[in-house]
Image (cartoon, rainbow, N blue to C red):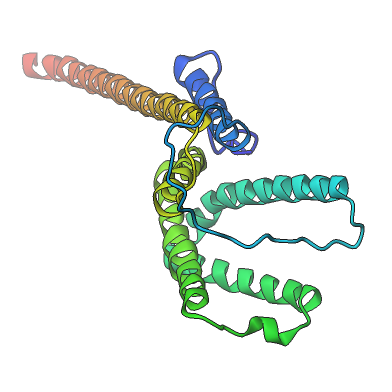
Length: 254
């Protein structure tokens, strides 16, 4: 999306453009491997695990295939919406460079949309009650950290490095979730997670190298243009001085 809107340069004929494309694909592939492929277990935990009650999903159709299809459609819509949000931050911040105000407006309009959807999907008011400290902590963490701090940092990164630079770090959260789930919840680590993490790191290296090479090339091009402009100016000033000397010579002889 950033390339289509000309917010990100992707020149496949140059190494830095090819590196950005390959790195993005490899990072996404690594996140996909972590999600879909398990492989052999690495660490065998003890029998003590965090017990969780089974979750049942109610659906009007009752068809697992339909639920799976709708889930994939919703995830795809989320990815497109998230990508569009990142890309649109570039023109928004150029015209309205107040990052905190943009963050506040984003959260306010997100809250309004959430309330409108919740009014139709959740009619039982008793479900809105906070019944435990864990629920209160989850709400505060989601509002302050996951929304406030995370959005503020993402807007700052988009303003400084562009949407691709920010989006390419998204697969890292998959690695962080896998590590934290193993350390805190006692989930099993598998070889698929390690393979995916390695792919994500390799993809990040390619993208960051491509961005660095692109900026270095643009800087060198600007320096060459400034040097050429200085040479032209010096040449013009030298020509004017020669012309003045030629005009002054007959006057001195007279």
